[in-house]
Length: 61
Picture 1 (cartoon, rainbow, N blue to C red):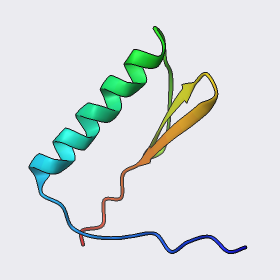
Picture 2 (picture 1 turned 90 degrees about the horizontal axis):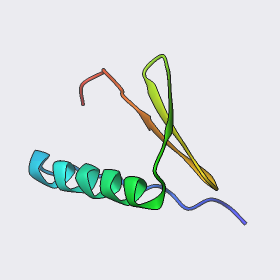
Picture 3 (picture 1 turned 120 degrees about the vertical axis):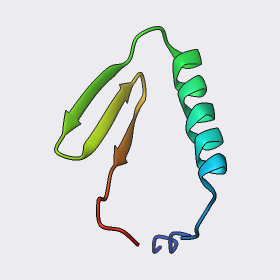
Picture 4 (picture 1 turned 30 degrees about the horizontal axis):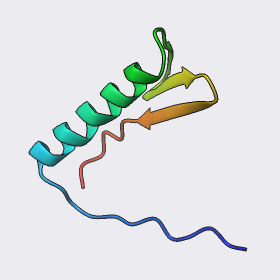
């Protein structure tokens, strides 16, 4: 079984803000405290039962 090809598309800044806001609300609703680590340009949110990783790519596109 192969991994599906990721979907790539441009979204508006407004839509990205809504997505990140919703993600932050969902994470904070799941538990009272979050372990956050930063390594280079990657933020890692360590949750009970999983991890959310956000990597910032500074190359324009």
